[in-house]
Image (cartoon, one colour):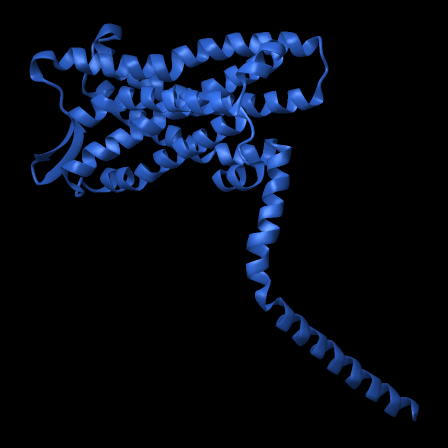
Length: 301
């Protein structure tokens, strides 16, 4: 996605800028996953510095990803509902400026993850987890989850419901196939985000505030822990879904991908094609000569 946006689309619009940043945030998120996968299977062997850095990278990828999906939604909203104003507002310069601000906000939201995550030895194994000040442990834990729920689910949902209701209202009165395709791409990205991330947000909220909903016991605690593990694993798959969406929903992206594959991948794979082609011709030629000779002998020619 990054290669095609930079090489072919040349980042000529605000939408391209946001799609590029979304792809970068997904890459950041993916970068941390092998470490968490190893940690889930064994224990933390990467030291305290990487524990803090990778916790920050995980949160930065999470927050920046949803923020850029929100910006893409607002971008479509302006382009369709406020088309005249969008001519001035939807420039590459504004796209770059808003992207810088978005990364700054996402980094700020990720700071507690970097500050409070650290390694700790438990029995014979090391862990990498959040360790809040003992005197305000509950407050920090609750605020951490609430912030993730509000910034990652509630606010995006409110913004997207408003934007898409206005977009649909406008499109019903104006049939424009190009606009409808652009809306479809962003809409599919948004829907997939909520499909993959909502279960984890709900599970983490219930897990954190379980005493407010029911009286927890060992069995319910165990079930909630497993639910968190399963839903978080499902949510992590999301960062690999967006490129697939671009390929199947974005018509231009498919065209650029085909051109890229033809020029740069197929060209390298087919370096031996001429020799293979000559070998094939020789085989065909020898077969043809042998069969012709047999035919001449049998017919007495």
